[in-house]
Length: 139
Ligand code: CMP
Image 1 (tube, rainbow, N blue to C red):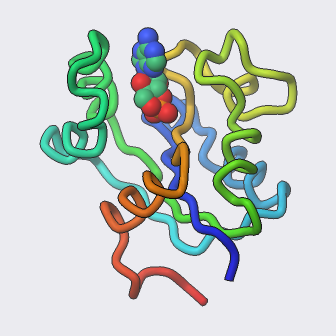
Image 2: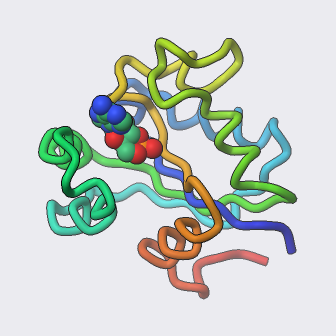
Image 3: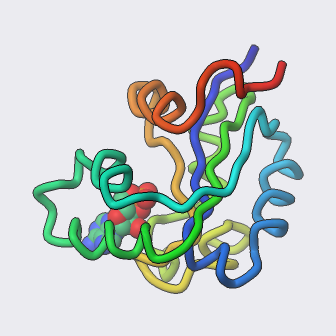
């Protein structure tokens, strides 16, 4: 089994009808989708998920944005999946993202930046079980 990483297709991308395009970019890159579901985050869930950013000035707006509409959360698998998905997403700010990345194609701003991916093995190990039980991951 390869490495696991956690992905969110954020409310702007869902609202803009980009779920299919983004999942296609993920699978075309060779990453496997182990689980996926559409959810409406509660305020408590969003605050808990982004707790590491609690002291940042953008925390309040980030939470409001993440609960503004449904998200698609997924677990991805592959060799080196964490770095591969970060490369596929591109820079946090879509203005800095390279051609061919998800954020370049679908991101509107640093906040409405289309997607989230785990930034390392420690965060992936927290983020995957935050939204999925082991029974929900296909083999
Ligand atoms: P994400 O990977 O989901 O992790 C935290 C998010 O905060 C980040 O993507 C951005 O969408 C969002 N964010 C909003 N403002 C900023 C900022 N000034 N710097 C970094 N991240 C920001």
